[in-house]
Image (cartoon, rainbow, N blue to C red; front, side, top):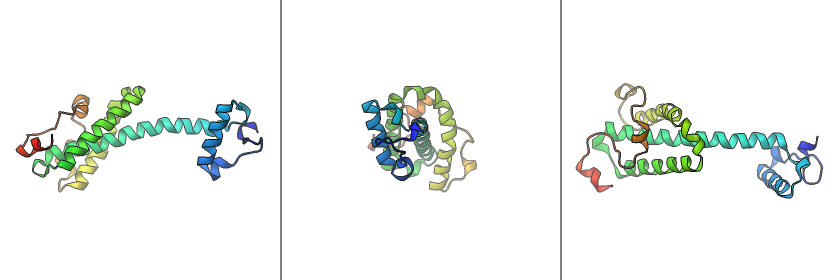
Length: 163
């Protein structure tokens, strides 16, 4: 089958045995326009996987951000520079993902709802609080989540030292 031929015209098992070498081989075949030697089924699978990875990365970063927003709001006496920096960093990374992948913007509300559960788990795991101490679904707006100046709850004097 021509879709599984390598650069030599012989069947290539690199996809299963040496993924990096397979990617280099496929890139070279594409650059050289050697279409009939491309591993089309695996190329399709990998391209689809890249899109899924971007969605997953967005959801993971939202989970970390939401978990830290919950900790910030519900444990004001434990706020730290580390929490502040994590919130800022996750917002920056999320906005970078959305800038680089604008077609993910319509997915954002769904990603926030899914990520909230991960954020809730993070907050429960890293604090003495329990699930019942937090709202069961995300109550932050998309604008609040992505706003670099938004930090929920009452501000304390220590909060100003980090901004």
